[in-house]
Length: 257
Length: 302
Image (cartoon, rainbow over all chains, first blue to last red; front, side, top):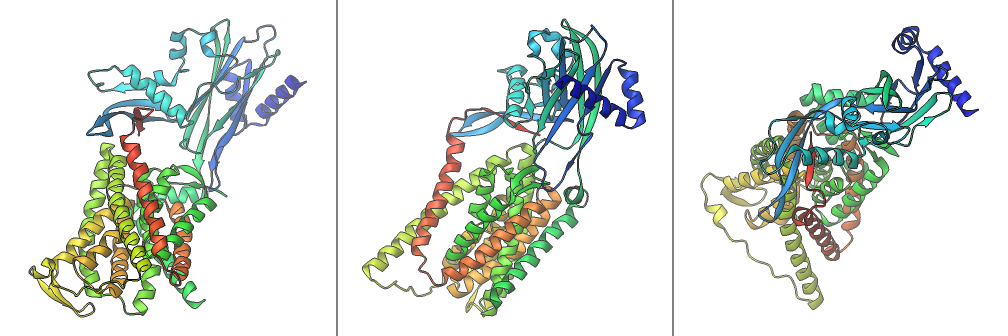
C-alpha cells in the first residue's frame, strides 16, 4: 500500500513536471524516475533551514536494485584548516592547509552503510566520501601528512551540521520505490545543490541519475545581501542612517513621555 | 520568532536578541556605560561570527550614543571643541583599526585578536571598576565624605599646540585629546565597543575635564567614530549585518533610555559592583578559551 502510494506520488511528480524535464529524465534513465519535493528552496527572513525529500521508482520487473544511495551536495568551496598550537601559553591557530573543491554541504542517505556493499575505491570514485573530494593545495606541515587535516575537515563540517554521512536509512520497497529525506540547516550556503541517485545491484553500479536544486535568497534577504556585496559603501551609509534615525527617534520618544 | 541573518548566514531567535540587547542596554544605561563591551561577547557566545558581531555592534553604538547625547546637549554639557579634537584622533584610529581588522581576517587570526583585546581590556576595566565601586561602598558605609581634589595642571597640559576650551574651562595642548581619540577609534574598530570606558577615565584623569561635560563630550565623539567604523567595516570587510543591527538597535536603544531613567533615581554603587563582576566573568571566560587545552585542535576557515 505504502509502496503504491509512493509510486503514484513519484509518477504524478514526473508527469506534472515541465515537459522538457520529463523528456530529459526519460532519456537519461529509461527505467528510473525520480522526483524532488522542491526544485527551489527560498531563503526568506524566517528561513530556518529546509527539508527535502527525494522520491524514486525503478520499474524493470525482476531486476530491482539491491541498494540505493542518494547524495545531496552543496556548491564547492575552498577551505583552510588550521591547527592550534600552544604559543606563550595561548592556543593559537597555526599551520594552515588549504583544500579546494570541498563540498560546502554533503548529506548521504543509503539503504545500508555504503561500506557494507562497496569497496573503498568505488566510494571514492563515485564521490560518496566528502573528505576524498577535497583536493589538497600546497604543502602540509613537515611533521604530519594531509590525512589528519582531511579527517579534521570532515569532523568539523559534521560538527557544524553541514556533513551528514549517515542520514536516516533510505526506504526501499520491494517493488523498487524509494524515498530519502534530508534536512538542510540554515547555516548551509545558498547555491546550486547536486542531487545524485545511485542504484546498485550486488555491489555494482547499475544506474546513476544526476539532478539539481537551487537554494537562493529572495526578497529582503536578497536585497540586503546583494547591497552589502555590490555597493558596500552605500550599504554602510544605510546602516549608519538607520542607526542615526533610530537613535534620534528614541531620544524624542523618551523625552516627551 | 526566528529570523535569518543575511550576512551572518544563520538563523537566530529575534526576540531573544532584542531581549538580551535590551537587558544589557537597560543595565548599562543605569550605570552610565555603553554596554558594547558586554553585547559583543554575548553575540559571539551565541554563535554569531566574531567579525560580524564586532562590525554590526558599531551601528548599534552609533544609535545609542546619539540617543544619549541629545539629553546632554540640551543641558549644554558637551564640549564641542574638545569633542571634535577627539573625533579627529578617532578618525585616524578607527581607519587604522579597520585596516588591522581586515589584515588579521585575511591571516585567519582575527578571532584571536578580538579575544586578546577583550581579555586585556575587560580584565583591566573590570578590576578597576570593582576596586573603585567597593571603595565607594566602603566610604558610604563609614559615612566619610568623598574627598575633593583640587584640579592641577598635569603633564598633558604642558605639551605644545595649546588651545582654549571655554566649555571645560581649560587651556591646554590639543595633542592629548587627539591621542585619546586614536585609542578610542582603534578599540571601536577591533572590539565593536564605543570606547567610552577608556575615553571617560582618560578625560577625567589626563585632561582633567570637569565631570559634568565628560559623558556628553565622549558620547559626541563616539557617534562619529562608531558611524565611521560602520561604514569602513561595511566597505572593507563586508561584515555589517543590517538585520542583526536592527534587532540590536531596537533592544539596546530602548533599554538604555529606560535604564537611564531608572538609574537617575538609584544609587549606582551596588550596580557597578555587579557590572564589574559581569565584566570580569566575561574576561575570564574568554581567557579560559585561549589557555585551556582545546578538545578539537583543528579549526576551519573559508
